[in-house]
Amino acid sequence: MVGIICDVKHWGLDAPVNPELYIPTSQFPVFAQTFVLLTDGNPLALVPLAERHVRDLDPNLPLVQVRTMDDVAAESVERRRWTMTLLVVFAVLALVLAAAGIYGVMAHLVALRTPEIGVRLTLGARPGAVMRQVLGEGAVQAALGLVIGLGASLALMQGLRSILFGVEPTDLLTLVSVGVALMLVAMIAVTVPALRAMRTDPVTALRQQ
Image (tube, rainbow, N blue to C red; front, side, top):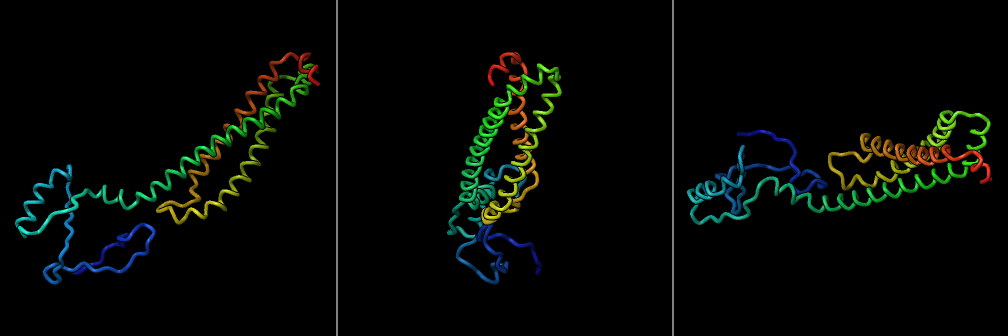
């Protein structure tokens, strides 16, 4: 039987695919052979049966490295998985630090405007209108920072192509998720101090000038 199969990543996910031939052992006997069994149940439960069949073929043939295909795949990507785990840890830490930085900057900017908010409330401005204005200005600043940050990340993430397989470094879902998360943090960072400032007595806010 002669046929063509799909490419097989035999030497690793990042290694080029080399042309290979599958030849019957009756035509080209070898000292070491690999048997692959396909089963719907627990593959380890078939080990005794596989050993009996191997003994029937050759009683002197040793049976070593009995593993499931999941174990083989996990071993092939073990080093890559550790690398990606470290990157995920650093990415989470960076996200937490970025969220804390956004909150600190936004809270400080709104706190500086507490006297201004007090003047507006004294002159009859509605708290809802002041809140919308503060949120709008904070959203504009957060959006500008987000655009700059995403632009820089797109340029830096091109270096991750060597450790990725089947996933683009510019994954749209990841970029959108991170962008939405940072925007939510920025809006919370603006809303919390703005609410605190608007609940301040206008007289007290004016004395802070």
